Length: 414
Image (cartoon, rainbow, N blue to C red; front, side):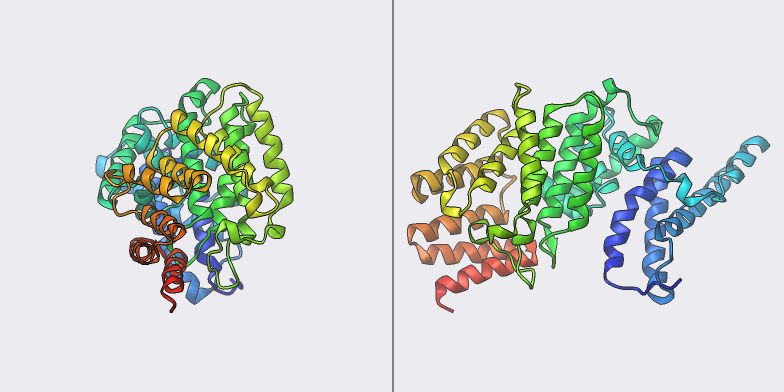
């Protein structure tokens, strides 16, 4: 072991976890136990690598450690149940004396994604389980994405793991018919993984590049599977059109730079061009869905050379259509922002009142942050300061909190 321990190891472990889980789930056919074994291997890595150095083959190291845990567990089960000698031999052969690199199937993570989105699970449980297993998100991060308490989400994930264990789901890529049944949940998972990567909901970092890149990679792989679905293409377009702004979203100290103040020369024009091409192809298929509409909104932003050139009436029209196609509190919140940009902040504030009683947004920082922004545009600096500070207390993202406190301090003349 000759690679020094550094801060990148935590990101590396998060990136490798779903790959290792995919290998173990395929070899041992026990999803819940495989996930436990991967978690134990991750803990061992966090303990050993700082002292001993990072292995030359980190993925292989994790697979070996997790596989030993699985083999030990299998032998224990055999002894406890006094299985036949042949079964004992099978379990012994599961000891990880295999070629680590050749054993890794590049499609394992994609198979894991579809397996977790099994129709035996409710859509919300399938999505939560997949975010945990494939995305590597914490229970707290998943709870925030669903706007539910962390304890509720922990129970949901636990039940989903048990359902996967009891169902005996085979570890293989589903047939085209099965993929069609699971596609909606798969796309929702990829969308949420990308969102967490593009705007991390917790911690000191504004963005998690590893998550965003993995979501884009898995969406590309999903798009390559037949049949070619317009919403898959729309989601990939949305990711690329959004990710294109990544370099301009933060300053040298990871401070948040809002869209209207970004240096658009830093935007990735190649990603924008690919996103626009994909969006055109998706829209040409006739039916327009949730991801295509969001991609269209992102495209309007990306095509504006300056913030003041943004076609806000077109964005407002797209949000009005999105509210009919896929209503929800976050869509309503963004619709209020667009309405404010077209008709003035007073109308935007009026639309926000409908969200005050929404239990999903109660205590959510974005509602307070948008209200503060619109109050500032109205000239009500005292009210804006109050709501900026409330929003800052509610967010668990340090860059978001710092930005909101800076806005309040600016208006207070501090």
